[in-house]
Structure formats: C-alpha cells, structure tokens
Amino acid sequence: MDGFAAVDFWVAREVLQRGIAALFLIAFVSTLNQFRPLLGERGLLPAPELLAWARSSDRAKRMLRPTLFRYIRYTDRRLVALCAGGIVLAGLLVAGLPQLGPPWLPMLCFLALWLGYMSVASIGQTFYGFGWEMLLLEAGFLAAFLGSQDQPPPTHVIVLFWWLLFRLEFGAGMIKMRGGREWRDLTALTYHHETQPMPGPFSRQAHLLPRWVHKGEVLGNHVAQLIVPWFLFAPLLGLWLPDAVPQLIGTVAGAIVIASQLWLVVTGNFAWLNWATIVLGASAIAVPAVPAPTADIPLWWLIVTLAVTALYAVLSWRPARNLFARDQLMNASFNRWNLANAYGAFGTVTKERIEWIVEGTPDADPDTADWREYGFKGKPGDERRRPRQFAPYHLRLDWMMWFLPLGRSLEDWFRALLVRLLEADRPTLRLLAHDPFDGRRPRSVRVVSYRYRFATRAERREHGVHWIRDRRRVIVPPVGLPDD
Image: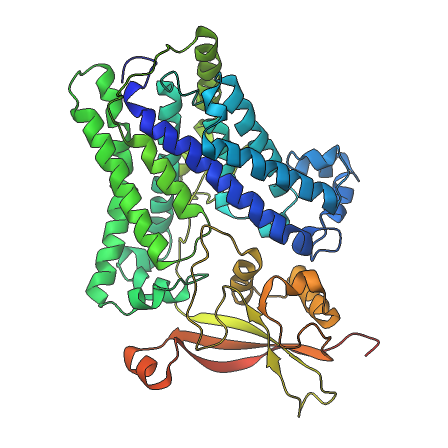
C-alpha cells in the first residue's frame, strides 16, 4: 500500500464493484418476482398500508426508514419500474462500463442502487427483515467510492471494506460464543445442517458426516470468525514496512474467509449472505498491478473519499462498542441509512426441525376429505424431493415459513396467505412450487405440523426418500371463505 493509493488492490476493486453489483441485480430480480404478491397493493402485508400509517403522525414518520415511496405514491407499476431500473444499472456495473468513466460516474450508479434498494427494503417489513439486506446496502454505499479503472482505489476505502468484513465475521463469532451452549461444546453442526432454514442439495450428506467432523467444522468456524478477521488489517503495516509480508498475511486471511464461506454455500441456502461475504473477502487480496493505473487519484476525489471515511469513523463507534458488549445486538442498524451496522447470525441452533404443512381440500366434510398438500419451492415438504440450490436468490416466503413454528402465534401475513390460497390467487400461487388444485379454489385449507429429519443412508436406499417425517398436530383447523 502506498499512502492514499492502494495500488496492489486493483483486483480487489474489480471483484468488489462487479460482485456487489451482481448481488444488487439478484436482489432486484428477487424483488420484481416476489414483492407484489407479498407486499404490493394486494399483498400479504400491503406496503401502501404501511406508508399510510407512516403519514399518520410525526412519530410514525420518524420510524419509517428512508424510501422514495414517501414522496412518490406507491403503486405496483412504479415498483416494477424501480426494479427494472435497478436491474439495468446493476447489469452495466457488472459489465464494468461506468467504471471506464470518471470516478463520479460509478459513484452515482452505486448510490442510485443503494437508494433504490433501500426504498424497497424500508417498506418490506418482515419479508425484508434479514441481515443480508442491510449488508448489501452498506456494501453498495462503500462501493460507490472505489473510483474508476484508470486510477488506484483509495486505501482508506479499502480499509472500510475490511472494517465491514470484520464486523460481519467477528460479530457473528461473538454472537455464537454468547449464544447457545452448542457453539461452545462444538456440537452446533451436529444439528444445524438438518435444522437450518433452507437446506441445500448437499446438506443431507453434510449432516451424515461423523460427529468428529462436525466438531471440526465448529472449531474451524470459530477460527475463521474470531481469529482470522484481525489479520485482515495486516496490510496497514505496509504503510511503514516495505516488506510484502503484511499484504501476504492479509491475503491469506481473506482467502480463509472465502474458503469458509464456500463450505456454507455448498451446505445451505442463505440467500446472498455467503456470496456477499466472499465478495468482501476479496477486498483483502493484494495482487501487484501490471500495468499500473495510468492516473493518480484526483485531489477532489481524495477529499470526497476522506470525508466518507471520517463519517464512517464517527458512525462506527456504536457498532464497535456493540462487538464487545455483553448484550450484543445482532443485525442492528444504529442510523436510518443502514451504514456501519452490527451483524451476526445463528447465535443458537434449533435441535429439532418442525415444518408447518399447508393442505387444502375440495370436499365439504373435513373429516372424510381428501387433503392435498401445497408444495413450496425451497422449504421441505414431499419426503422424496431432494432440497435444491436457490442461493444467492432469496425465497422470502419459504424463509418466513421456517420461522413460524418458532413463534407463539400466527403471523398476520400467514393468515393472509391462507385467505389467498382459498381464493386461488394467481400471483400468490406463483410463489409456490405446486398447487394441488391447478388454479381452482379449494373449499377448505388447514395447517398441520410435522417433525422432519434427514433420512439415513439405509432409509434412503430402502424408501427412496430424503426426509423422514412424522405428523404432530393440527395447527390451524379447516377454514374456508365465508361464502363457501
């Protein structure tokens, strides 16, 4: 590293800019496909109702995070236009076209993505209440200040990415150490591959590994999240030491983070969380620039990026203190703009997998009815269906279905979902993998809980199933529409 110019981090900038843009593209595609049936004008939790509430009082206005729809009336068509614009802009950044211009051009493009997606997430309610939403927003904001291809990236902006990755990984590690005992006695992965929100195609094989392997996984996780992140900052020693060793240490630290995240990609479906961490891990990888950038960092751009760094120094006090607080917050934002957030996930691991299965029937008598099961795209249902890989795409309804058995009451959105199924609402049915009634209305629906576990190798050979399930109880007894 050479003063304000991170000359050897040109590959890091390429990966950061194009990788973060690719994640924005996926996020906008996910929103385009799912927002309207979930949160649109006739959604399960209509965003217009939230916006109307936000206009009802000054206190409500302050509680709503920044969104363009505060000033422009929400309609589903405008949501589509916003997503289409985000997809096009993100695609241009993935191709690297704005990066060929002056540094203010990619800056404006990333800030537009940041503001556009924040406008969506701010009205997304529980369906957008995931840590990777604020992670994408923060990463997108920082990517705006990486500059253009004809000049080296600013050192202080690269360091801000290390700080983001440190909060993400070390925060997750500390959450685990303060959380369930299973992380401290190294048994967490004995359960997690089976009970995680949305298993992937190789989750069963990972679950069936020997216990000593699971303990090794947990131990490796602790090393990757609690020890390795400190070495991300080693290249800063290069400001005073000409030796290349500090950069090598930082590069190795970034590579370890990437390797640990690739294992999580293989064994689960965590939307773009793991992929975002992989992209951020590349920020620590130093590669000598050949040929070197042809231009120096302009003075005006240096002033802009230093001002952003100073802002981050001020905003980072609370998340830094949170990392070492006894009552550490997980996935929390300390300001309205989703900057300098606190991260963390899976402080505790569930030991048993309970799934709520939604069934419908065309018959009048529920006691003798032919009950047919609705199939979801990602959550377990049919025992013979192997889990699929969806990440980095985010199946929002399926994720929320995982949380239902962990709560103590029916969520409003879930009640609305049952009504939409009774209405055979086409946009809602498109969120599912299987409609047992082929678009026709059922007379009644009900919800039954099942305990799921992965089939052993012997059970798989004998029965041809990936899951073994046993019926527990009826959660929601048969219900129908009033006119039925």
